Image (cartoon, rainbow, N blue to C red; front, side, top):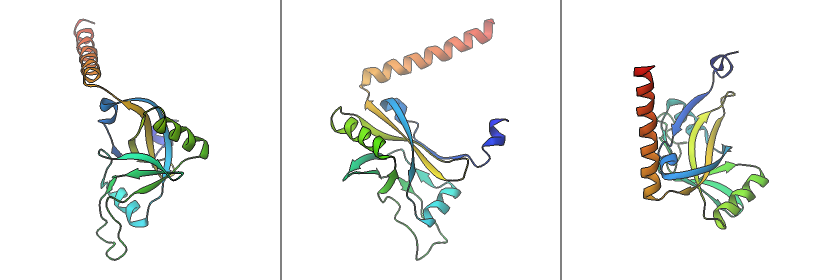
Length: 158
């Protein structure tokens, strides 16, 4: 069965492309997110941004901070706040691991991609990583450029 046949409902809503550039992501976790009805409807229309957001462990719970979900026009009186804190759903074991990583080891929890899974449920993939220094970023850019140039050379001469 092809991937398209299996995942008809899979759809990327928002992607944080800058996360892998700014952070050295060591581990990623899929987690659920608690949303209101108008937020889900807005996400189905594609109005979301997670580029400036981050996740934090606070009072024994995991929260998405500063994630933007556009207002849903048809939900006049029962709308939602655009940048409210949203609770992320992970197991207790994952939560304690994330807390240890952020509190003791200086890691950051960065949202990587928000998507509808194959069942049509909104999921958020978060990554645990350390911030890169400027020279690390330059090194990654140089490596990526060399890979592109190498691919072009192989295509031309192969």
